[in-house]
Length: 360
Image (cartoon, rainbow, N blue to C red; front, side, top):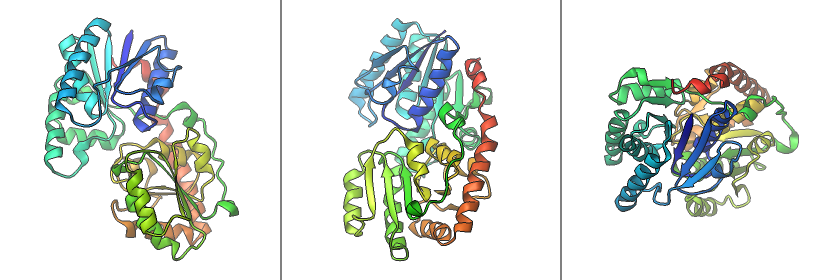
């Protein structure tokens, strides 16, 4: 079976890590798996996952009618010439253009994974555009995958489709599946907060910074390191300076050893406005570090009822939940155990042996 995985960006991120893992599993079962992407990066360097990598230069994240049209034409010809058995598309732009191109090229099986659909966002002209694209895309899809039960329920409410095409495909990459719960509360890391995510608005780091400024008044040794890169860096740097946090907050940039960085934290923080199922959260749960997160996407579904979550886009809510843990080692350790227990409950939902059957 020849499979093409199609995604707009190849940067290091949760969707890209999901694609790398399912492609790796598919190749282990003898499938010929290739990648097409708009820009080369971390994902295109995962040689264990892909036999070949193809770049579609006009496949870009931003809406650009001229380039989007060019990408569609290129993709349709590329798919027709490639004679793939399956085209598996990911995220909004590649998801829509890829499914249209696959229909034009008469690809036998067209799949799409929704990595936290934009339909979950508030009503706006942009939301309406996503709604229309999801309705069209669903009609061109043979197998639609949600990454969580939360996502599945949202898609069923929002998208007109045959429910038979929709399945939940929660993926826990192998290195996370086998991760031991090694976190301990060390004195030299007690006041170190760690966050992981590329610097985009949906990650909520601009909400975390005012919370950090308030907490710094109560905890003089408190520090925050954010691992990730992205277009919000200038805005976040300006906020850090304005809030007087230059000695307390570090925008480290991207790293590949996320679990090791999380292990060094006193608390892992996920302040997102919007998420699907963040893999960095699963890594934090696996290590056994205490977690403070916002109640978005599938976070509540996977972390369970024993971990307190903050309301999104509310610095005060983050302050309250963080203060509760920072002020009590007993509560901090209880949250750590609850997160690891939730991770162990989650693991059986991902059976790697079923990956070859996902398109059946």
